[in-house]
Image (cartoon, rainbow, N blue to C red; front, top):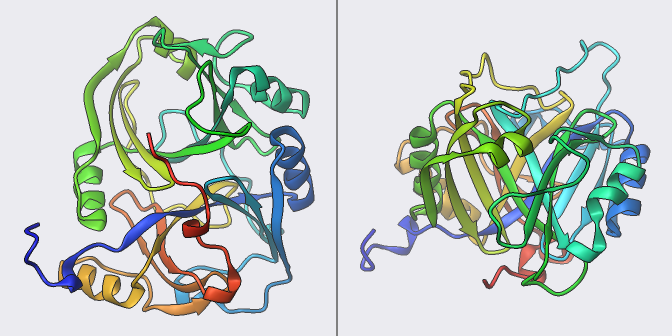
Length: 316
């Protein structure tokens, strides 16, 4: 968009505020991630009384926020007594398939998570040296079957033992998803590729003859990563996932001007599940992307302190 457009029509997204995850046992998940990754428990909210119905989804019985140097992971436990078992989301999606934890190779967070009870998805006993650039990749699942990625870096560009690198969306239509998020962020992706394949990709993904298209948006503190599996084919989503289903259930983007952002996107034809309302995270408004993934825009309350503007930013 041209530089002389009014401020109302400029995106104010400043980063990924948090990735939400629905878990079966909040305390077990807190222990698994904090002990293996060496991160801190930022906040716990028990028996939440606020009504998330105004946001378009139900409230968890309790939740916890895990703090990384550059972002937050929000774990939520829901009453699942009347719900059917959640299916494990395949690597090929569709949906929010994983988040990525990066560390210097010497930290070996892959093995620490394995020692904590994770199960491997990638082939082999160690992370895969995928592109010969000193980065070693592996997928694995926690005790709920929720997948995550670890990346070991021989030459980490960040200080400290760990970095909350990215969240990944896998879509049956990459172009459609890129178009939506380009509108949301008011910018094009930083990188795209229409062909990623080879034996090393097979090892990481756990499929034979993998072929992938991909795009990446670099959003201040983290990366939003998008994949489309050409082989095996990413299926169309059957219906929007329920927030109570085990797995990643929301990606929240922090904005500096929530109400202006709501007006900007509404004027561009974006449909919201709610109007801006106050949640435990601050002013928040929810919507779904073209694949049905739940996302939200958040403007934190100043006194809450949970703002990515206070955290480390990606500078490389």
